[in-house]
Amino acid sequence: KEKLSGLGYFDEAAKQPLPALPKKIGVITSPEGAALQDILHIIGRRCPIAEVVVYPAMVQGEQAPGTIAAAVQQASQSDCDVLILGRGGGSAEDLQAFNTEAVAKAIHDCPIPLISAVGHETDYTIADLTADMRAPTPSAAAELAVPTMEQLRNGVDALNHRLADGMEHRLSQAERSLQALRQRLAVCSVEGRLNLWQAESKRRKRHRPQGSTADAAACPTGFLESGEGAYPGLCPGLS
Image (cartoon, rainbow, N blue to C red; front, side):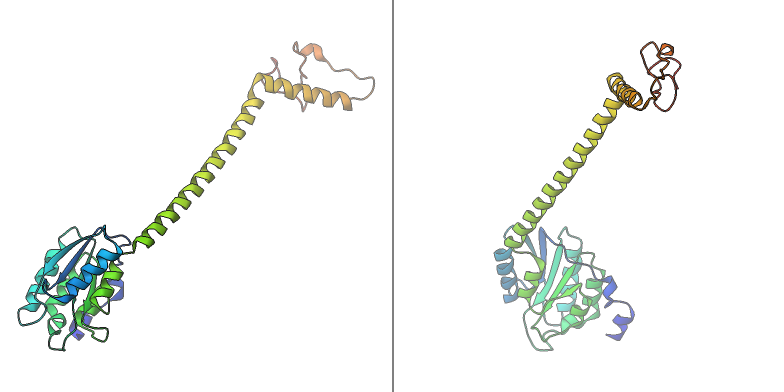
């Protein structure tokens, strides 16, 4: 255990998060064991749309470490989204295969997130410490691996609300931008400039000292020829 710890097998930073919605789950266990049936039952009840692939392995005995490591290596090359390595409870001797370096190395090298569910809640093995997540039982591992259909529906509803809010926000922004462009177009058009000149002309007339006159002859169209109210492009020579 100290050797594997020194190699970084138990580092929390190296552990991978579980996928939120796995489409395919790989299960590494004995095909004859009760653990497999528990896992299949839980996954089938919680998320029947998920596909389960079983990678058979001996879970106790002298040959067990080699078959477990080989099954993990095979599963790690698959297109599974998450793996479950597990077996039911037993004595310390029964669980010894999950305390071997061969199994720990296979788990550590696995690029797919792996849940270890070996024995009962009080049983801890090196496989549990090396895995990305430890579950107290195989059934608990299945619950960790897949969401319920209700959770999926709630997730879809939340995404729909976010999409609707986002679309409403984008449409509101687009409407404000369009209104701003219309106002700019109105100002830049000939009619818009004439309206501006007329408004400015009325304003100046109101504020013109009594008895003064404006030199409109310089501008054939009647535009003010100079000063603050001049509009470029309205009349030749204006700037």
